[in-house]
Image 1 (cartoon, one colour):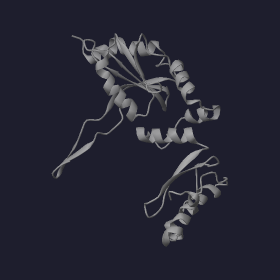
Image 2 (tube, helix red, strand yellow; image 1 turned 135 degrees about the vertical axis):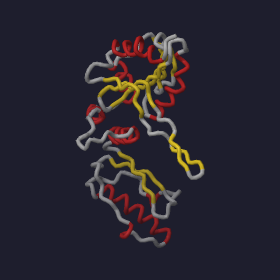
Image 3 (cartoon, one colour; image 1 turned 180 degrees about the horizontal axis):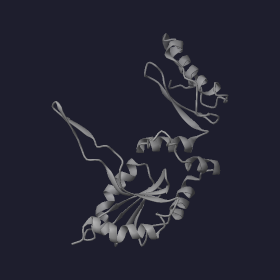
Image 4 (cartoon, one colour; image 1 turned 45 degrees about the vertical axis):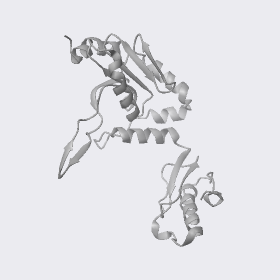
Length: 245
């Protein structure tokens, strides 16, 4: 009886290669662990659980994965791997995932919410085109998103760091600031189209803690520092005019 490893070697990898995922600049990351495993404490002892490991990450470029694929042994149903594929897709913040037993391939598209059987894996160009059609990204945004990470320090970003970097690149020029006042009672989002990615830092020492009016003023002050100090025009909703503040 063929094992999962046999199925991967004989069927899954050849099909991924035939679709072009192993041709530069695209790549297949096989058996890629992306968490260290949750630590569970029992009494005075801690135990680390199993790492989450994707069978295959399908990378459009070195640092930009498009999909995750979960494989099952040939004698099992392809659908048996779909729940895990969906879980990993959500954790990794991807739009596409696949489950396969080497013979059957099932696709889930989070953009449309459609799960369906497919005859072959899509090519990198096909999957990229579907993502671009949904995201409607401008040319300069696409260039930022596909810019390789700086790995000169020898450290590869964790999956959650990659997600954060990607989101900033997507939203660059219209970044939303989450601003929390020092009393912990008011959080607001502000958009700044001129944000240069390196705002000035407001220290607590320069902020008055007295009274409700000052609470509003100090949040506005932080916002002004984040915007005006970077040479940008204020484009967010002034907090002082917000009735829910």
